[in-house]
Image (cartoon, rainbow, N blue to C red):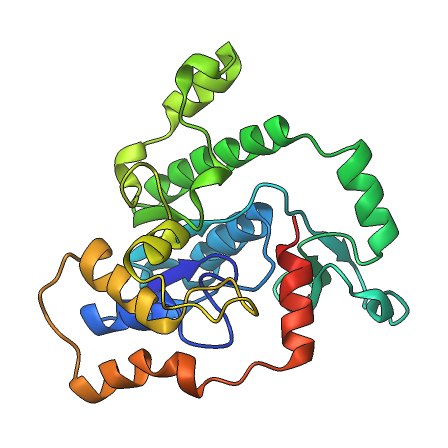
Length: 259
């Protein structure tokens, strides 16, 4: 089994890159991505999958997301809280028996207060590096092969000269050889904008369409010359013309991408 973890760039309302990993592997691919996920959610999904599926897992792909995101959990679903989901998504997690709000606080005024008075971008980057190091050590301990990616370039800085001593030491603990980058530390977003700029439903949606996901898997992740069936390719190619985006989906997407 191959496990994939990430945010909406990993699992969305249309096929994303894990759907095409299946085309280049002989194993089952389990997509555990979730829209709006913070990196703490991605990390927990990763280690929970190892405990849950154990030796069935042969490889893990992780796509890290924006450092500004955070999650809120409740032991029980609060019906009142769900009425103000302006900045987040809510899902019940059976494995942990709690309700998770992905992407931020479920009340917009509390989210704004947190961003303005508590959140620190440098600390957020440190936290992401800590999660990367933890995930790499955890997967190595369980003898599970893995590769990592970023959904967008700007979630991490690679200028060591501008790092503090603690920041630099943590950065150097990361095994960067396990990352799949596009050009200079770029992610899926940079790849899609560079190689397939037409594969977006702008201005309604900032997520790359399926064809860009497919080509990144084929040309970057696997560097394969194997072509998919022509009918499947045409289906991906025409997704922009045939897909329908509802106003409610667009409003929620914009709100979750706002920061």
